[in-house]
Length: 158
Image (cartoon, rainbow, N blue to C red; front, side, top):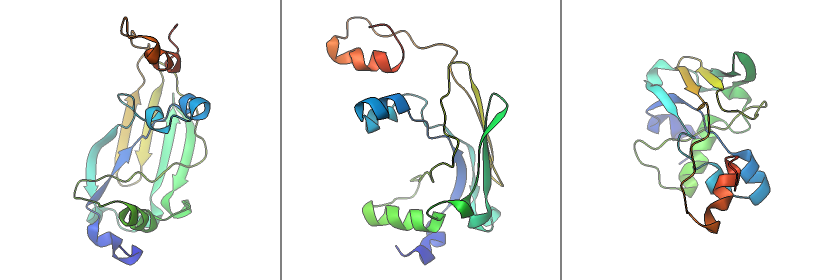
């Protein structure tokens, strides 16, 4: 789809916090697993329709961790515009109503720890608040050696 036609197919916008276990990504090259844990991509709390947004390149967003500003960005400063991101995604993948495309992140990516509180605010969209669990889940018993990398990634003793 040409970038000029992208606004015709966008329904709306929401907040998304696309969490990545960077330790797995860097250490093992485990891109899929690094993004695949429960709770790693909360979205919401609602969808704002495109007619309520206005100019796509003037949306600002902020991420605070425990009340400290960690990231600030504007869609107009992204490497690829929203129009270009959707055009690229539609070239590679068949898109259907309800599909979600995450736009990426500005500088300031960093570690979050158990008990951290994250607050993502997107201009004209809203606020998504996330509380990181206060402790790691108990690992399943008797899963075998193949399961050890999962335990290590969560800081559990092997």
